[in-house]
Length: 159
Image (tube, rainbow, N blue to C red):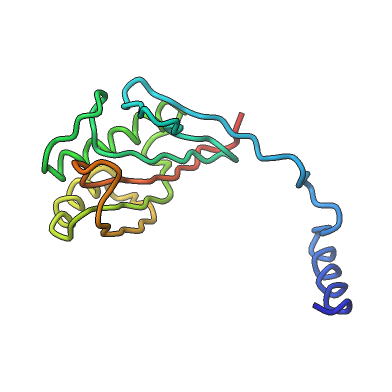
């Protein structure tokens, strides 16, 4: 970019009330974050956070296992329900609810699971559906795992 274009861009930013040379935040300071955990959700042997809060958002990714790490074998409905129950438990632990979810990414291992997973998924969110991305994948972390849901919820200002 030429110097003239850079100056023009800075001028546009400053006339819009934004000073690009002196932003209202410190770029050298990392965004504060904290982990969230719930005794209602299985804790992996791997060092994954069950959920992470940052910038007023909570980021949660769950599979469809119970607290002991067992999957309902071959039952995508039960696994989807467990995924969403686990997500709900973690969001509630942070002070929110499923109504705060703004985006989900759903991973399923077979196209045949699409319709039964959707029936359970849509029932959890009712008329207030979050944005959603869905992927059919060749496998997930555990061979018994048929569905995984990654959710982002906005809970407001991080305290």
